[in-house]
Image (tube, rainbow, N blue to C red; front, top):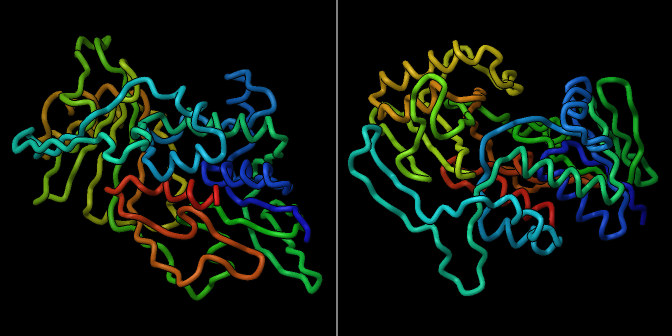
Length: 344
């Protein structure tokens, strides 16, 4: 049996799959559509030669028992633990004005279970990329999937939009909720649909040059407006670093699945001020409004409904992570299920 594998998508799921396969004697190669020019800029900025950097994307990620066990089985847990700078012991649920607080204990209840971890997505991803690079896994940027074809001699020919063609034994689609691989092998499957929108941001906690003392009330909390359909989630990933997600369950007008590649805003003062005014209109607590106003990075996001598939593979092609299955955005299980997929 041949052992070459093309992994489409070099996000956390794809990289963990590459690490797992490499350690099992396979020859995986990662392909990602990320802009190679941006990759070069980030590589020069960080000095991480030979390791593709994907920049400061996303906010924090929640690593729970199932995802942490997958990392442990791959020998990655100790390295990931180094990213843990604080321990969030509880989650607070409250209305947007801070009233009706309910506190949920986040400690594990099973003996020997690993405590949940909340880390920056960009740092977690960079750690995985370094490990993959150390193992000799090649990663190619600027490779957007176009099509594939299985041959009579049990090979898979993959074509990318830039004209690159590779021939491998297996293909893994780890290219996210808008997966081109999923769409190609299951053309009859319903497409993902956007049912809401939001934002993800990063903020420095403490004194701000504007004079605002930027702070959360709790290390982890969700402030909700159940009638208006709005919510803000905040988490603390270090003594001076925080992240937030703002969700609007009202379907945005004029937004389609073609808007999947939303990137961080460049005009931060304009966008953060505009969003802060929106939160004020929702009746959100003033200190949370100030968090948004002083954010050092802000990017839009979409809430997507991904219809179920009866199976996640076809022939020599398999889907993992968000390319295969969606989860409720409030469960914090998207990444953890992807890690389980990749490590098995």
